[in-house]
Image (cartoon, rainbow, N blue to C red; front, side, top):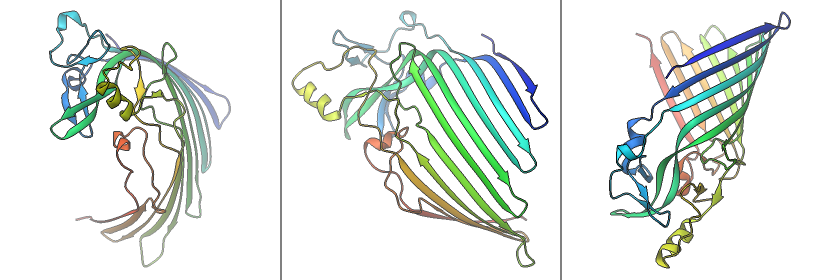
Length: 296
């Protein structure tokens, strides 16, 4: 295989540029995507070559798949990126849109519940599909002469299989803002304070839900609730949107650098859609981090 790209930049004005990039790239599956077998953090995973399907579309992981019967092709990506960039004095913004088409996209999807010596765990299998990824990124930044710096970012991603069915664990849209104040005086080299509010939306592009209780009940009653071996589903509803606030104070004096930061200032209860621990518990609440660096 080969990778390559070609780009073009058009200068609309002294402060505004339009750029376009088209490229292709590839990667082979890594060793864990092929052969992982067993518990990994909060779930059990089976690699591409570590399972088969029975006549009821249930996963059978007792035998290793014969490599001759399953040829693993590498992922092939075709990328298109276009961005508009404005920059003048201390103010700049960038608006970017992109489209990626990936053949043989490898991802892990839920497939059911399995019992271990530590109890039942959800298990995931690695599968392949052709997928579309489309997104929009926006960044606005202002570096003030008075020591006030601000940055606002917005990220939006939409992804689906080529047949239109959604994928799982695609990051939801986010809005991030940061404002910082820097002060220089004769007592301290630098005194910098910052506030970082951000909001994460609820994932809108998500598959259907098959609750864990329904899967366990179907196994007890010996009922097949899976439509097909290509079905993509989730085990729990996507978490609601959440707002987080972080703040920090940083001081520099000669060879010493102090920083005190507070994450999740409002002690918000939230769960991250792309984190499988969301099936079990919330993320960390309010926490403080203190650091001291010395230049020797």
